[in-house]
Image (cartoon, each protein chain N blue to C red):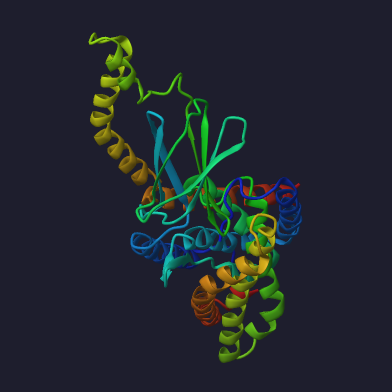
Length: 197
Length: 196
């Protein structure tokens, strides 16, 4: 889910940039020094995840891991995802530098929302934590496709059309990421509970 | 947080990164990617091009829009099953080829301006005049011979471009390195601020 350079109009790009900047400001202020290694790891996980393509039917979509990043980092997901996206744009030409704002917001915000909705479940029993992680990971992907569709409203003919294609394309991804997020969370709960913050 | 970053944590970090990278390298080699690229060249008044994904697979049945140097849309065509497209144009200025692949993906390629187009009609006109070979006819013959010879090189250039667009392991490892560098800097700045 990357919007390429030259697809969006200036107002949409600007709106994305402003929203992302506010997210970045909040995120950077909330990071504690000792959390930074964790942020760096998740940042690189996000960076690499986009290279993992999962072929489903005629098309293929890639992992995003924005749910995992969001649920482990909260608002700090913004700087983590921003850095990941910036490097993807520079090194792989995924997305683009002008669309960085829009892409950052539509990937990071769903993660942050997942964090607030499901964070209580993470701290309960193992099963509840897994379900929380699954729902959080899946929701972040689905919300991400909706944010992307909103950004594309002007460019594409119908909002419902794009949203429907993106959603169906990403349903398997949402399922897979839900499972990944769930397992990572219960694993961290066992091995390194303080990482769940 | 009592511990900051001991060797145990470090091992954990390294393991996660290795795992993800190995996964990425294996899986991305087989599947479709999302970045779309385009390449095109002129051949007389024809423009021939191809559109493909990062992994080299063709971009089928995609709309191709052609803009002139002023940004006005002059033509529209579609790619075939192999991702190839061609069209005729009398436009000598710079051409911009845009392929909106949908869902926010887009490829762009510019073809440089030419002084004049190699004309295909010249032959007939000349035959009626004199049996002598004139400049235009020579040029015509050279153009045709060159086109035939350049075909191989053009295909090779296309293959090279496709390879360049592929993601290589160096970039992945380099990217992860940059990320750690960036976060190291942020940590340093934050620490300085706290200290002062």
